[in-house]
Length: 560
View (cartoon, rainbow, N blue to C red):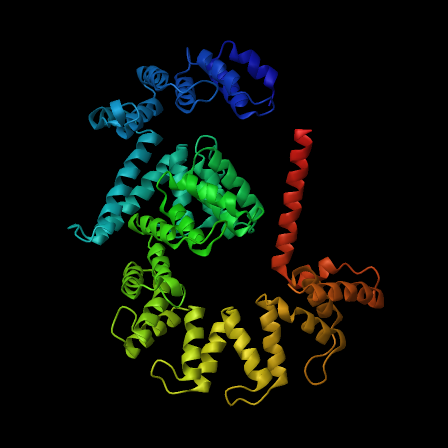
């Protein structure tokens, strides 16, 4: 790109002038400057109607100039006068949303007039607006139990909306490209396709539609179509947050709460959640409620927790009902026993489709908390949850059969079957009890050192650091009839113990063994690589931390 040639052409050509304005606005090959970009766009708008839209949007967002709705309207009207479809569509949006109305009052008649003008030109923006109308009508029918229209008709409307979005996106409408990207991510009315979603997101100017940055962060956070990378996800969330995307603010709170992509920091998490809660975001209220209940970054305050969780539930975030049930559950909060409320909240959560609450409901039936005691109903709720693949429900059923609870006859074989299913799904408690059964010969089962060691390894894989050192010693020297010596596996568990054990003595012994172990086998061994080969999750963490360090170093250089 030859900046000098474009600058020269911009003196006479409005199209070149708008291109130069965008170059400065985005900082492509030049120092970024919203002010210079705006000045160039104002000059270009005298001969290029498209530049009017650029200037109007700059006044609307405050790019290089104080926000001025009057100036934004003035420049959009200049575009309308030149028969520009985007200007017509933009004014329609402003009037329909109440941005230009007194006290936020919407002017639907004026908005429809501008939308009709844009639609008559069959431009990509009017196609997007028509797609949105069809999409909203479809959602209304699907979400309203009393709607007289058939569900099949709603699905047809949704398909028509997707076609409109596709036509609009092909014409370059970034709103439509974003709408399609979100649909491909969620599989909403269309088969999920992360590659197509990523393709649409990369066509979008993140400065124009910052929600695209949030979507990219979401995909990196979950590893949808891209390698999971918490650090990259955090950076995209941060970018979207700076542009006031509330979902990104919530995501940053979750990052700070969990330590994904950044350092774990409860006060920072609370600050982000409170910022989002001011915009009435129910998920932010939900997380504040959780932190109050668990005393994360603050003293435990169950009254405040209930207040925030209730606000989240009433705003439509159904998992909040489950947490409200837990607040009133004496098995979890013995000092806040409210059996009637406990049963009510668990029931509401289940009715709303939050199946995990079936475990709480089952416990209410088992103990008679807020409802008549009923073993059959308790077993039914827990069994249904287990059939859906819930590992905790499988674990509880294992306990019931092992101990003969819930009106069941003691059945060790069935108990072990449920423990096995739960452990295979990654449940650490089920894995631990299977290890103890075969290690100690519990519940009438004979001791089995081979099976016990297998479950001990699985327990280590579940993250139980208490077994790391024993596993390392076992692999270092081998145990006759149980496990053969394996230097690489010994190094792996010693390294994990050195890094993760909660017992200082074990960490020190493991570090000492690692250094001697390396000399015995090969003084040049890189135990980080050994561990990474055996533990892909830790390899990703190493890469993530390298990225974080590189970013920190870059920031320090920039500040210097």
